[in-house]
Length: 360
Image (cartoon, rainbow, N blue to C red; front, side, top):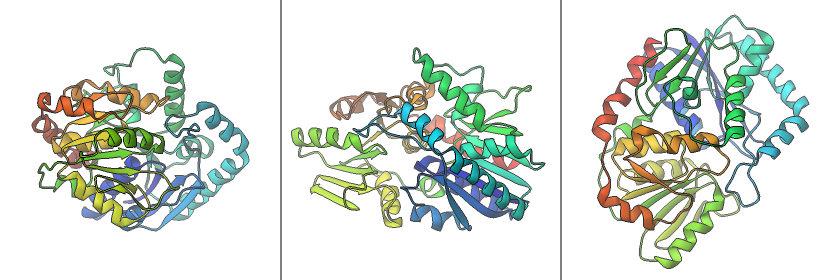
C-alpha cells in the first residue's frame, strides 16, 4: 500500500509520531510516497525530521498556535484573527494539497492533527481512506473525564477536533492508558507512538534535571530558580530563536534550541537516558517518554491550552509526577522520594502499539 502523511509540524510530538509510524510501515514493505508538513512561515522543518522520515516532503503554511507577548500562554484571539486574515492563502494551500494527493494517488492518507486534511476531506470528498492519529481525539471517548471549568476552552477544543476529523474513516486516539473501544464509534484507542531510539535506551540516573519547554517565556522562571540554586545542574531545550543554538549561562545552566540542528535532537535523546527529574510543558509525547523511562516529571500546563490541562489530570499518570503552574523545581526535588515508578505497567501498553496499528 501507498501512504501520504500530513503532519502538524509546530511541535515535536506529531513529528516523532510520524517518524515512528514511517519506520513501522517501511519495516513491513509499505510505501510512504510523500510527507506534507503544515507549519508557520517563521518555522522550518527540523533536520532530525527530514533525516529520520526519509521521504520527500513539502512544507506549506497552516494555522498555528499564536502566543501572547510573554511567550508563555496561547492567545486564542490572535489564532482566530490569523485564520480570518489569511483565509485566501489557506484556501489556496488546500487546493495545492488536493493536487499533490491527486498526483501521488495514495491508498490512504494519515493525518497527524493538521486541520487542512480535515477541510480537504470535507471540501473534495476523496474516495481514498483517511485516518487520524493523535492524542487529542481521546476526548471523544465516553470514559474520558474532562477537567473542571474552562467551558469556553473545552468548546473550542472540541470544535477543533471536529474540524480535524471531518469525513475520517478511523481515528486512532493515542492514550496514556487502555480504554475499551466503542463498537458504534470510529475512534480506536491506541498506545503512544514513541521513537525507536527511546525504546532502546539503557536508563541510568545522574545528577542533572532535564527541561523541555516549547514556550520560551518559561526561560526567565528557570533562570530565577538557577540564581537561587546555582549548584543544581539544568539542561534545557527550548524554542527561542533570539538566542544561539547553544546558550550557555554557566556550567550548570545550558539552553539548546529544539529544532535547529540534528545534533540537538541526538543530544536530547542522550540526555533522556540519565536525567534525575524532568520538567516539561504537558505535551502528550514528552510525558509518555518520561513515564516509559520510569522518571518523575514536573508538568507545567501552558496557559489557555486546554489539551495540556487535561493531560496534566490524566488518572493513569497521577502517581508519575506533579503539576504546577511555574518552573520552581523545589517542588519536584521534594517529590522525588515519594515518586512511584509505573514503567512496569506502562511498558506492556506501549509495546502493543506496533501490532495494533498495523492491524488497523
